[in-house]
Image 1 (cartoon, one colour):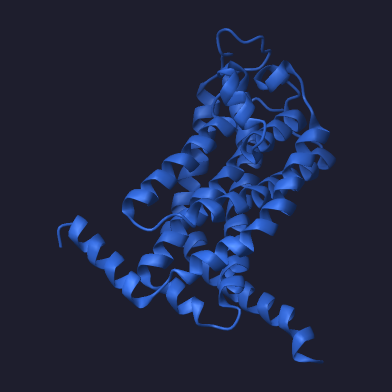
Image 2 (tube, rainbow, N blue to C red):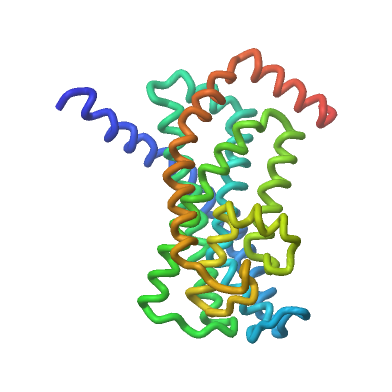
Length: 283
């Protein structure tokens, strides 16, 4: 086998090893406790909110809609996870070390995608199972459950490019905080509150983003109540199309963004960043 043909396999193997290394601390010990706490919080909020929101023509309680939205909308957490891990890798010097490795940036990006998407999908599965047991959501049929999990995985993949693009601009604590706030706002509008009750300009922005359509599709699958939707109706084909477009176009844009971002990783830049961080923390 020629080196050219063996390259993709070697990159994928290295990315898989990196993903496994990133997943271990998140699925064991304190990481597992954090996941369980987050999922439990979603389910508790869903359970105790047993009345519909005022002003909405909804037959379902807020908690039911919230839980159904969370299964898909939690895909937005991929952006925050990528942003946080990119910042940690940057200030710790990991990105600088990756830069000098053969195909290092590509391997790093694939591994980070695999680990963050896998982590969020695990949480989405837990929310789906918990909602079916503890929340007023009809136990989905095997077909609907599989469809819901496929939507959740597709939504997480669709959100990953946005996470890489936003994290490319994170160079210090302040830009990290801005990135965190942007991702948090997209996460909240994705499933925590009906987009139909928001201003028209917010609805127009959300209609272009995977954060809205991920929750839209799981609400369509699990509850079938369109009261939270833009225009008051479901558009599953359009939703899948938007998510696929973000996967295809988004990952086409990620490589040049990653390459440009890695070109700025230098020893001098890392030293200045770490020095500024120590100064800001009072050390």
